[in-house]
Image 1 (spheres, rainbow, N blue to C red):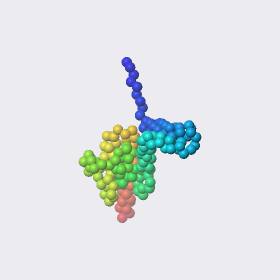
Image 2 (image 1 turned 90 degrees about the vertical axis):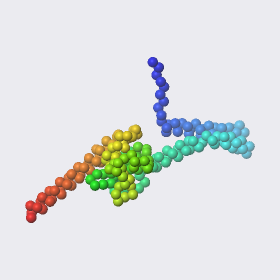
Image 3 (image 1 turned 120 degrees about the vertical axis):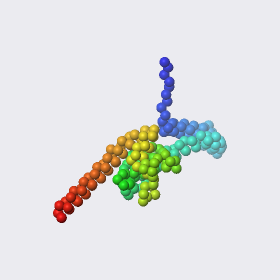
Image 4 (image 1 turned 180 degrees about the horizontal axis):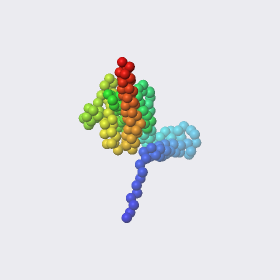
Length: 195
């Protein structure tokens, strides 16, 4: 039985190698006239002539690094949300209370799994799973919607995020609401006995 050769895909590593090779080749070729002729105007002319064909190799790594930078910037919370928010995988997850539940803002949740909100979302989920969050301009997912999104996702962070949300966000929120309800009930019983 022959073993197939499997290459592990690592886009960032490939981008680094591509950048080094392309820029290295360009610099090497453009410096040849100076090495052969010394530093003069003729060598500079030949170097410029060699640069033009090499210039076609450079946009790909430049665009790759621009995309990497854009991804990095988009994952940074540029302004702190002035409400309930949590942080997962360096992404600020805004949570809003709708009735007794916490709803996650769609753009934040989808950013973690490298997706973007589309018009299709409203047709894929029921109104109790995905809707406009009342009193805001945001769309969001209910806990059921969050579970549905993350269970369908193939992103490596999806299942970990679902466990994190259930353990660190939803469970403490339910506990806090139950405690507040108990305190309110105890106060109202205390007020009745005083009367």
